[in-house]
Image (cartoon, rainbow, N blue to C red; front, side, top):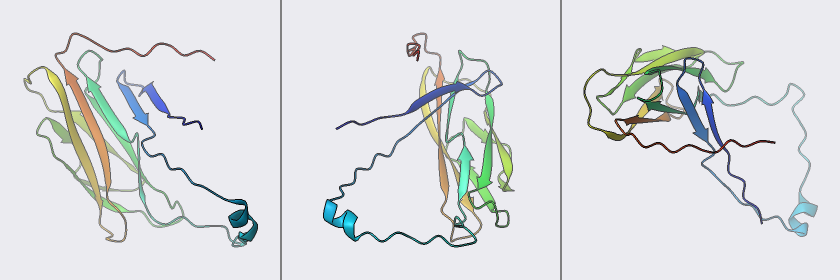
Length: 161
């Protein structure tokens, strides 16, 4: 059996490194008997319509004082592009993290930045939560990691195809 984990590190265009990863792995078992009794779904002539859901990109934010950039803009959209915009409220659980707008609607951006000030060397973790005004839509949590004052660094080797 093979498990493939995806991890991506990239530059967000303003010099800050961003990262994301696949954090949910599901395994399913299908027997021949189950496969034989499966009924092919008939597609809706108009096509499937996705339910309203907030989608945020990137899904996680990484700040490092060794890399230029102490702010990033998250893109917030509605998974159902055919529906009306979704309004949301933003909140964070860390005093060192700032969101420039505490509310907005899709499609749009959310500016996130580090708050100026002295911090002890270390690795800090926080969350930004986007809470939709529509109670039928789930809230979205964005993980934020800030590394400051640490001289040692871990680098992933270059992978070539």
